[in-house]
Length: 609
Image 1 (cartoon, rainbow, N blue to C red):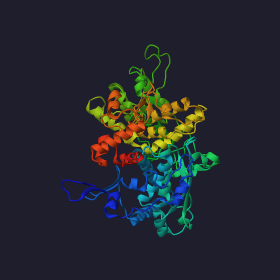
Image 2: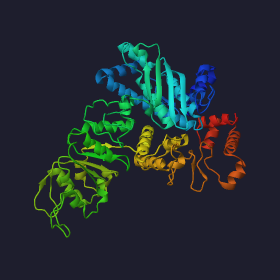
Image 3: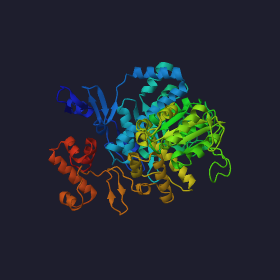
Image 4: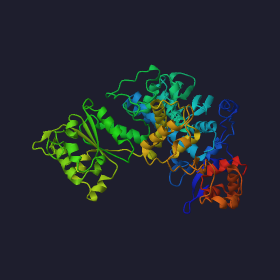
């Protein structure tokens, strides 16, 4: 419990602190039945006291009454009246229709589950898969949405295959849905299904789909849900469509499994490709909504974002779902064409215009007539080429190099850049009139590190795609690989994730799980808490091993903590930090450069408290 200098109120009060101070019980979450059910995990046997427990998780919940905020570790939370949530739910259903509202709540639940899984992985990195999975049910209950009763669950670490069955009690969604609409014919726990899918998929690094097979909103006495690895469902497309913001999103490797027919789309759906757009994060969905809005028009679109975020894929999709989809889509990388050739490439050339021009040749504008011209890395165009491009956009006509007549073109221009064009205008490197001509409808695509909720979906997608492409049988990812991929910063964005997984699929033994040393082989800088192996065979980083912020190496480390295994070194560091700080966990955690829950977990593990 901490206090600010100028406020009489504690800055943050954890639920666990309140329980200790008042003697009030937090309530037992796990009973004998849960213990027996958890023992069915193939990977390990987990008892009711396996960490993280409900007490461990409650240590992460903080109230800050002085500034009006509530925190679940580093994620801000909110207390909301159930009637207010029910009112919002009813208004969305009545205004958008049940299908659209269900999709909104499912995607919101998915993001919440993914964030909770990231929290568990960050603060309890050494937790067994079974205990980490159970932590999701505890977090779900702590957040006030539902009480979860475990029926059975199975996770095979050799194949990364998952199957689980749960009963939900006291669902807030059912209470509000029944109050508004009475008993109906379809399940109503939409957010909770999305939460379970997001949590388990993020935890295990592969798509695990949950389905509510019985619901109180359908007149059942209790809600029952089943979760399985996506490829084990016969008609997973029916479930996946609620995770997609738009019909053109997520034509994934699981679509059509078991012969299920995809539903009809409001807009013509493009052919399903293995490299389809995949994602469910709020940032990705926002970009998809903008794409859907502008696609039917002829407006010029400018995609911005770092290299590798998928600008060309979005541009191609824009063309595929628009009225010009039956006409050509022509892509040009402006940075790949020499400055002396850019004009002839874009606008064409007449015979004899220069030495070697033995025949007239149409440019990209003419070839894209009636369709779409995608100009990638447009910020690299020379000032002269920018002027000619501006004229073409204004007049709708081109003049070939060496030509004497204008040619009318009806081409929709879509541009992309990974540089700040406004800054380029201020520096005199880009024409301001061309910028405003291109910036009619900007769409910013965020980097992958800002949409980590999409990483598990992309991991599953690329794993299946490259397994088929290279004729390799791959079953999934090890837990170390999942942790590394979820914590990596991806300077190369989606393109880099794609390359990492393709490389690993090729390198890994047939039928094996992809591990860290299959993925990161080109000098990528991993998170300091992720176990990796350098080419010389020595450890780089430490998988959950506590190291002080100023890490000694070689003889200095031996002198400070003595010799022994990694576990012994960790125990020695913990004991010395606690002694130095007089047993204060928070102070010792700061010395070691970890969070308090991480230190508390490991201290109990080594019997240090």
